Image (cartoon, rainbow, N blue to C red; front, side, top):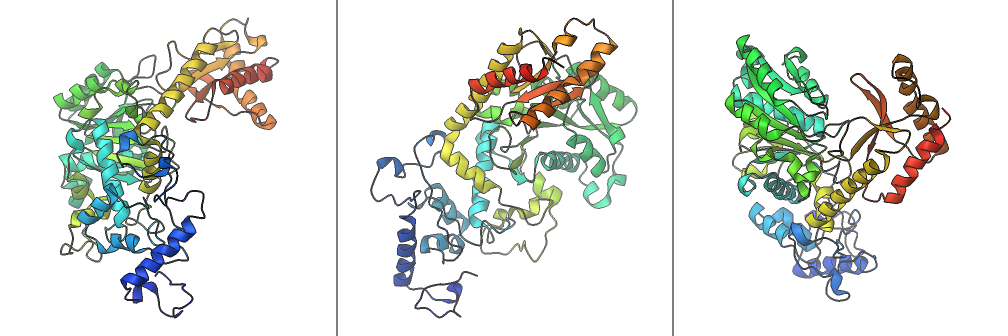
Length: 498
């Protein structure tokens, strides 16, 4: 309940219990505006610097306008009359308010950000924010008019799990009621270098990890399409039913992008669901310079995209996007009567909670919405291009530098730059087991010294038959070339005498 802290009101009478007159509402609004003008981020746009006046709400051109957002701190105050309109409005009216808001651009009422989004009446602002933003993301993926469906989930692993669940429901809907016994032996396919969440989903959903078939990759870490088709054919010959293929757009270690178009051809040929795990690489869709690395993503049946990775949105913020509308609802709906009554006075498709495997959900959309409004699509593009430019700069700096050796040839596909540093003591050793064993210990030692000295920290890991190497990933838009220069010099300083 909202509490009215006005000195002339009864302390026992809550805000919702009052029949507020127009005069009372005006008083509340004036009170909030008075407090807001004392804040450096005031968005009283009635005067002052023109940079702070609301001009438009289009995603594509809001970058660097000096925009501030009015977020009244109303934990101890009643909501203003404009804010209260959200709870009294229909979804259609609220959508108009959201796409063309009054001068106080976005409100933060005490119940809403702390509440969970499963019905429109619980979180009307955030349900609409989520729908509008997901539609925009689907447009960027390339689905006509942004059609389809989607939902925000607690992370990329859960988004990937959604994709497996939806694919299974698409081809064998009876599994929802009868269980896996109602289906033949189903098999899934994914890269040997894909994220482990696909394997976890196979185990958790009852497919079994033995029925997840790993695909070979080339020297850059990309799935080999011929290997996929060969393994699909082999599975069919054994009487298994190939149902799902995961293509990765930005693998965890190498930052590799699987050839989506070639994989999509095979999926269409054998009637399999194509999912693209773009948790790490999805941000590149915002860049006209780099989005070609995901050519063919519009042919996917579902896409995982994590704005909390390359786009820098605070954890957690992950979306599962689905090309065919209705599958999320059909797969997960349980029609809980106490929440999802079909005879509500508004369009109940706005009650999105029944599409989720959770009940209550955090309103992860809010921080993403605000960031997109602040930076704009152009701002995200510049941020992502800068990070990729820095990774190219690091690669060019060390590819021929004495003591450094790249894990694979060629420029990095993403911001992942993978390399070894060879101390002086190893540079003239012949290739062999002794050199491998000693090199395997170098990266952990250098990282430990980095952390002890408090200067830098770069991850390392082995991969396949390759010994420990550094994996430098650049996703912080505040990084500069001088930071890259310092990093290289620091690795040399700490590692030269090992």
